Image 1: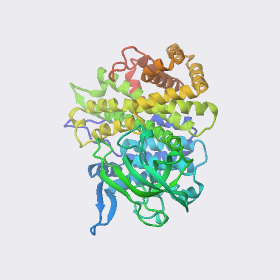
Image 2: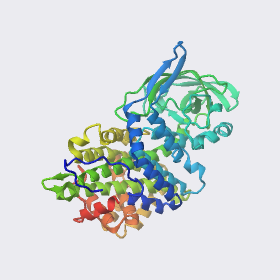
Image 3: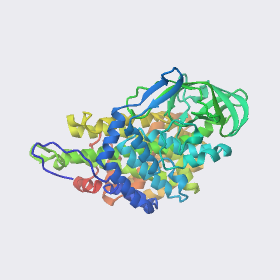
Image 4: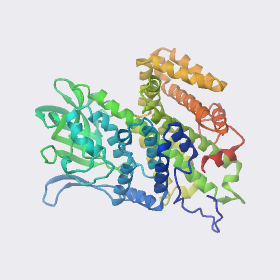
Length: 544
């Protein structure tokens, strides 16, 4: 995508295929045995790269949701109005399987196919990914209540987007959100104060009335939410709280305000008050935190996938600019310092992609080795990909200079989106501590993962040395290791990425990744080292 333009202004990147132009993603799909989905992914790639989709994504973010608390006659409606562009993106995510594909298709490789679609969608519009991924993640949790699941399953597994604000029985498809955090606790959900009082059995099982608040109530226009509340007898319990009760009446969930967020502006996040809102128990009473942690594991996977998508889109925008912009008599892409930066970015993007896609593939397996990998690498990948995306998107913006810093292009929105994934479903410290908890609770799993990494790393002495240092770290007293939580997680992720690159990337990319990532000078900023003088070859292979 190189051209010469008389005014030296780079044309908008549009009408290109996100899947067909991404060799790393195509390899990951093949590695995950999801080639059966390739034709559909090519269709999605063209759809996401089309000008019409780009305009819908822009509109969804330029015209944010509006809260209407009351009707013209003073009745409480708590309605959030969205721009049509939002519904365009929600419908696209739904029909592309982002809300349910792994539960529609029994093949384990459906998780790899799903991961590719999530990765593609996040590059173009990320706000619609929030209610979509929560809906997907809620399915195994809702299934813990058989009566409820029997009612909701056809609507959860639908590939249609139904934006109508109606009782569940009248909907063709539904979305489900989450309500966990409260103002006094944030991530410390054990300090929650919302109470649930039993009111007897109903059509969906044990009914309760919830009174309290949620400080972050994600996507308030969802048709229902999984909510954490305490019962007097057993404590924190998970409840399904519908927007409309089973009797067809509006549930008293009062939206106090929408959050004025830094990014993710197309999606509505809110503060709510429950005024004896009806909910039905999901899972064992008193085990609500554990129940919702299971849901969080699925959404953490999606944070890793979507952040990898941010990196990819940042790289593609930067490469497109550098291949079409002249400075000092040459294309930017031909200049040594820029080549080193872009090659470093290409390595970062590919490694994030293989890490997230490999993790997605393992969600389709119950093999002990894959379960061990998921326990350890899900929080680690979420931490690393999300954390790296924040600075990376700034680097991509800088390649374009002032043209990257204006709202006429996509990089400003991408830059604002990146931090939310680091915060959502647990901040960086929470993720690193979860890695250590996984090690403490299942040390055999941790050593099994290290055994696997060691077997792959035998061909790369520097990577083998990293595995040995990880083993040495595990011999530290727990209180000493906790202080090194981020260091340990960083080393774990880089070692895992190096091994995945050895297995899935080209020899040039794998060797360059290892040489650069374990260079003592690498890390503070992008572009310090690309690990090879063959930067032009890396860039040629990065974007077909």
